[in-house]
Image (tube, rainbow, N blue to C red; front, side):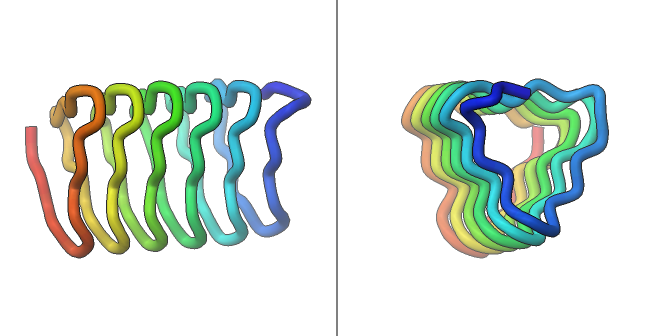
Length: 103
């Protein structure tokens, strides 16, 4: 974990995982094993990211779940959306609020 990352209280981190500089993980979020969060990613409250790669400048919305997926640069996953196992999103992709994707 980069010393330049900001991890709020009540965040669950389960390693191994990689958290790059400028990442902000908000309270109640869960970062699971084998997760990579690239530079400047934001993980909102109560979101879950596990077994996934989120490249630079990704934003994971409140209560969203990203599970065993790969997200390109500048991707946005909306509130309570689910990006399921095997999904691969290209740069600047958007998954709108309450949507679900699968690989």
